[in-house]
Length: 601
Ligand code: ADP
Ligand code: MG
Image (cartoon, rainbow, N blue to C red):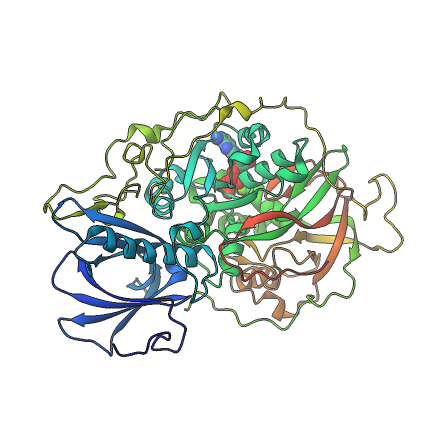
């Protein structure tokens, strides 16, 4: 051994240390050291390789399974670590880094008895899983499976029409294989129409789920949040951890989560892989919501943005280019720039007091340089989809047994993904067998579900203590600007789209609505420069006199131009006076990391 017990070669504390064989068995042996953030792998046989250590970062790891051989005579136990590290890849222009799956299997063979080897394999698997899930481990902690929380049960809601319409395919190829390796139990429901998800979440039994995850764009999460807020038990319901796996054209929240984890800004399947990885880690952070009131008296909740003018025009008018995915917004921007509209209106706001987050010195930001439950007919609602997915059989299966010594899952473990022949997912393989390590399959108790409510929406939620009714003047402490605007935007996340890094200093729970507006008179060239710079989040450095950013607690928009489009979270709402106020730390978001700071209001 080249480093002393208790510390790793880089000085960090070692929690576990051991010597193992490799699988497939080629005579290679390794020394493994586990610290709180990394797994260090050093080759011992055939030739100690002190210069070359493989370091697996635990942020890239999603799970670890124990396995055993088909052959009874083989007394070894195995554990397989599933990670998705960034690998350099040649692209048309230079190199890019993308995540690629790596499953490393180690053979525990120090004892002649399987039971002893199995205990060691279990200990390593439990330690790795604890660290991935953020369960703290002290060096003196006795590591056993009992330290692990029970596997999470997630309700996955998939919009097959989000984005370019490939959510179902990406779910098979990316999401389900990963969450299975992470021992997450799930029920997957494909939405059948608009507001289906909204109605579904009104009928679920909260105790049965550890989280609700949308596989779509921002629009489906908007439905889920409002469905939860329409429940009589909204106060408890809105605390349900919410996740998003980006398969839409507007993936702003997913991009904000990706940024908060310190990952490079990426699009498409790379953003999806990053977000699925973070979902597997599971850490939850508080998130602000904004309650919105419109002139017809309807009230609902928003997690992302309110837009009027250029941005909402592009969002809605580009619906016809939906087949282009997120590129629809670029084309929509070009088209709208050619006939730039301005809108007269009154914008009022309540400035945030003593706000240190107003245009801070920019942080240095790294940019792009750089199973389950068997799929069952869940009796949540009679419209629960049958899932065409179920018909695709046996494509995600064990490879034909070439060697009788091939490891299989230890009792209770899921199948080893390292032996999967195809990345296409098969529900049948996982039937009744998702949960690792001896836990039985989970059951969903249908008796506690309640019928879906009628379309009439009931308004619930906390008091809007900053707002006066829309037909009354705003309070005296507010500021009002009457002008011609190119756009007005209230945003409460860093990103307005996967590549629109709109408010780099925003955070999920800063208690702020970042009010941005652009006044008429800005040249087209300046507006183009603004949007181009937004990809890297440098647009505020341009010091354009037509552009204003203000951190506020509440706002009111009163359009004086007759026709126009207003969107909330990218969804069109009635045109007319609209107002909103922040509700601090109101919801919970699965961000996967604990880097999010809890800010006082
Ligand atoms: P995108 O980012 O591509 O717009 P969204 O998740 O925002 O994707 O969804 C777009 C719209 O589709 C939302 O208004 C959502 O409510 C709606 N929707 C959800 N499920 C369905 C469905 N099965 N059929 C049609 N529309 C749906
Ligand atoms: Mg949308």
